[in-house]
Image 1 (cartoon, rainbow, N blue to C red):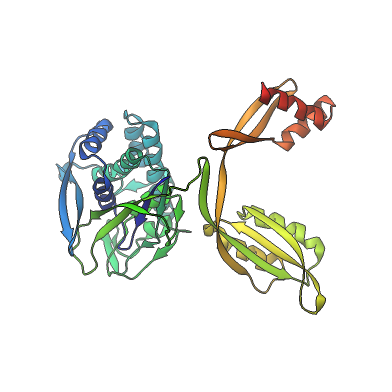
Image 2: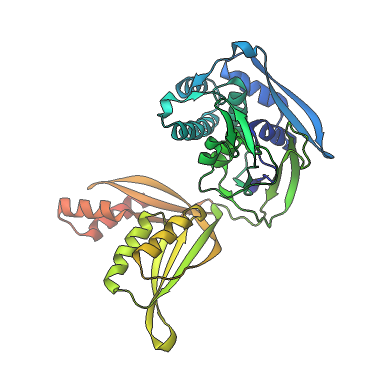
Length: 391
């Protein structure tokens, strides 16, 4: 398994990201040729080797040829440019996902709809090139997973189209909600809205800990020459023990021991936990001090949902405290298909390991509806599904 890891110790911007991925091995001519598929004129890429505080890397600049003629575009204009291009569909999808994140953030900050957002920066040619270029580079690298360290946001103030703003800029703060961040390393804007959106859209897992071999290190050079090297560091990691069709991700387990709650309330508590984003939740009977029978409430959840789920536990139970610890989840690849039976269509969840389908499970509610409709047993519906799966 090949993994791209973003070490954002000094933040990230769109041009730093391009520089880092070019330094990692993306072919510069390929990137330029693919950007030409946007069919827009007025910019070109300048790529060179540069250095910050003794660290050598690649600097990528999008040069606007006629700044006075530069347009400010709305989201629909950007979508038209991307959709009308001859870029691969996955590149289009990823690029539009990044643009949409920025549009949503700007809309929230200015209390307007996404469609009315007037892109001061992101609708400009340099930002279009940065975002679409990011999608092109990631497609070129063909990594199996993207990971990132907590994002350094910086401190102080930043000058933008609306005047002097605090760091992080309001749009950046909105984009990185529920994502691990750091602040205060430098007294300037370390992460731009474009850089933040690229990470939030593309990263599968945020973690400050890696325990895999580093096969390559690369640096994207920023515009500042500050005391802390203004560079974005990226690694290529290789998980040689990764199993085919098995993905690994970090999750959190929350636990609370409860000995004084009405048992009738546990069903409601579990419903609220699942509604709040729990991957799983379960109850375990335990014996506590003074031989009291009690219940251990356990919740498995994504890291970003932990705050909401703790609120649920404190609000809907008598818990006075919660333990938490990180775990690694290993998941089989899953796909949902629809099987046509003589009774009607049924959704089936298929699991795969080492390139083979190892398990198929019919959606119970679909089976139940067909059994009631045709006045047959559930076993008869399941028998028909097995026949279709084996044919």
